[in-house]
Image (tube, rainbow, N blue to C red; front, side, top):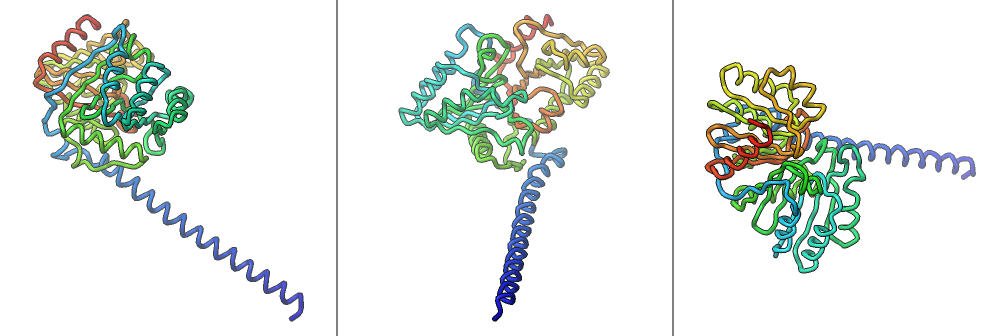
Length: 353
């Protein structure tokens, strides 16, 4: 065979191989796209169809556990004591975790005595990825399991919860100096199996960078963005008998404000107390509501109190992004007059009402 013919055959063969590999790549990409689209659709299907779900917000509330309020002088001592008592596991899902040598060391000591320590951090806090870098660097250097969140799933992982052995903690604040010593914050500590088991599942799902969209698996006392929080919060507001107190850092979502205005127009007592920030100042003067801009301590809490004694504690603000796009976590409480009165008194002192 002539050399020219051989070269021609080789070129044709090479060309066919290139076409074959292109086809394979296209098929693989199509499969991946279909899989991601299906997963995405399954995730958001629950949000699109949340209204009318009988099993969501059925009226069951947590009734055991305790509340811890902040600020306090040695605020991190409470957390360090809980870490030092851990025997089996410490799982943390938190938006912001700034440098704290005592907490770092307590977690390292726990890991060294055989406790399963895992930490999930938001990678883009306030649009600034460096904020959690020191914590992440410490954990990686000391072989503690740590991950950044996957922001292809949520705008922010703004949840603040952790599990220590059989106890769970749902918090309004982050693990920062401001949280412990400067801000108005609350932590709810409980141990009921329903809530604990669910939080275990969510932590594992989020740590693995997967979706969760099974509405039927959410306990009725749990409030979680982006799946059921808007429904739960609007339901809580709408079921007000005579009075509702909103004790939340930021309130700007138009639907929530509209619901509060309707209550107010119907003769219900609605008192809104928020942090004195730009977002709140832009809406409070035109809302027509009894709205207080709190000063010291800085109001970072996210709480609602209803006149029937029910309490709402969670990580999210009343913003559209928090309700619809973030990972957030909260809990509904009832039959806890001690907790209700404590927060009501904080509200009175802080907001003058």
